[in-house]
Length: 384
Image (cartoon, rainbow, N blue to C red; front, side):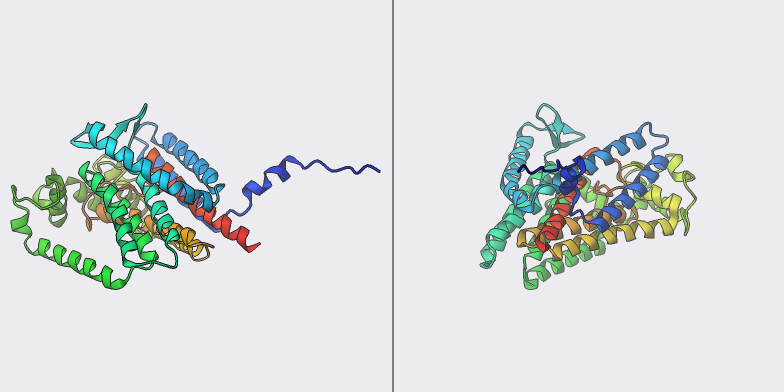
């Protein structure tokens, strides 16, 4: 007697690929991307093909998210050391053979021009999560010291380029992993106190410290100028302070409900510098006002909260640390960008996720979200 088996349909074959995706996370990401594209249509209207290019960047990021989500966390962990090693090798090569533009050596020609520091935004949390997974159950002070060295080494290279914004993002992603791994507050508190004291001294002695010719240890002259401009942008309103002043004017002029879609005068009269990239939040706030700003912040809070929920339910230490660091990295991006545009932080060139124009930033975003989705899918498989 012969037995006939039904041939599975094409949907039955590909259905497992789409199973396990975290629906709340997808909904939040789609909402934020839609918000960003609507805003880019307005702010990039006078800037050629920015909207079309950003739409392509969003689709590329979505593809990266989908592909990375198919990689189990165990295989992501196997990529940690190679990716970190390649990133460090490229940073070293950049220091020796890098391309210099506007006084900064941040790019490397490897057949195409790349910015190796971008790799460390992903490699850093991966590497540290791998390190603490290997040391699980036997963590000592030396293990945290080794993790600190793994963070500070690439940060030192990136600061040397110089690129303060990227260095800050790489540093924060590493510190988040170290914190979630269980770093004692007795070690964290002195650093916070030292930072508060340093800021207080700078504010108290601003007049003397901001004089031309006064050197700040560990900082380039342009970095010192950014801090001094933040404290009083009116000292050079048409020069170093122009960005901050115009950003604050745009945000304030938006009022509660904003001037309306494509009605921003500061934006379309080109008073806002870099209105599609670093200062895109100023253009957004001018047209959508306080209500739009709150909507955007609620979107980021929802994304961070959902990421932390995924982290709390992750089956392994590696997954928990990685998901937690990726989730809080969105806080760093949003806080630093909105802070520098509104005049509470120095201008350091950090993009606003989903909103700022940029292919590299969107691809990095897609990679991070793909890892988060991979961890969410692994949680679903463990529960079955």
